[in-house]
Length: 385
Image (cartoon, rainbow, N blue to C red; front, side):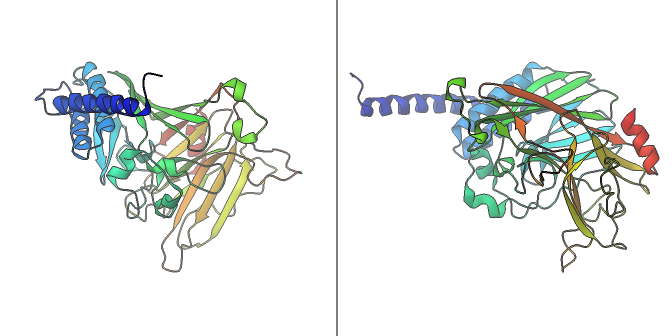
C-alpha cells in the first residue's frame, strides 16, 4: 500500500484545512441577502466559525444559500423567519393566525401561539446545554442530569426517559418556501440505534393546522438484520407540555379534553387548578378518537393534537399539586408507541413501531389551534371537522 497511515492523516488534514479556508473566505465576504432568513443563517455561520466549529459554519452557509434561492419573502402569506429563544437559535413559522417557534435544538416546538395566545409552556432553560455543546451535536450519558426543564413539544423515548439527542441541534432542511406554504425539516440519528428520524413541519396560508410528518428510517443494511428487537422496534413518544396563556402559571384553569375508549376508566381530573390539587399519571391508554388537547375557557383558546391511525394511545402526567415548594405544576399530553404499561390482559395493546432493516416508516399528526371555545363540546366539534 503506497499510502501509509501518516500520509492518509496528512491528506485528511490538508482537505480539512482547505475546507476551513473556503469557509473563512465565505463568512468574511460582504453580501446582500434577499430575505431575513438567508441573512440570519449567514450570521449563524459566522458565529460557528468564531467558535471554531468549521463544519457547522459550512452547514449554515449552505442553508443560507438555500434560503437566498427562495428570493424575497415580501407578500408571502406564510413567513419562515429566523428566531432566537433565550440563546437558542430557531425559526418562526407564521401565517398571521398561527405563530410557531421551532428550535434547532431537537426541532423542539417551544412556542405555539393562536391569534396571539400562547398554548405551550416553554419551561425553564436554566440547566440546559451551552450553544457550543448543542452545535457540536454530541450527546453523552453524563448530560442526562442537565436535560430537564424544557417544555413545548419534543420527541422522546417510548419509556419513561427523555432523549438526550432532543437537547442538541438537529440538521435543518428548508423543504419549501412558497407564498402560501412553508415547510422545514429537522433530522437526527437516534444515538445507539439504527434509526434516522426526520420530522417535516409545515404551515399553509389561512390555516390553524400545523402539520408534523415523520419518516423513521432503519439505516441497517438488510444483510445485517437480526432477531434483536432493538434492530426493528422503535419506541417513541411525542411529548407536549401545554399551558394556555402567559407565564409560568399558564396551565392554571386549563381544561383537558381526552376522548378515551368507553371501557377505559375516565380521567381522575380534567380541570387543572390549584383549587383541586391532584397528581396522577397514565401509562398507556387507548383513545376512542386519535386526538387530545386542552383549552382555557376564560381565554377561549387552546390546542388539539390530532394523530393519524398509527397514534392511538395516550400517555399523560397531571400535577396540579406541585412539589413542596409549589413548583412543577404542569401537565403533559403525549402520543405513545411502546410496550410501556403492557399487561397480558390488555385488550388494546400498545407497541413500538416495527421498522425492518433498510425500511422506512411514516406517520403524522396535526397541531390544531382551537378558538372561540368555552366548553368541551365546542372543542370536540373543532377536532372533528
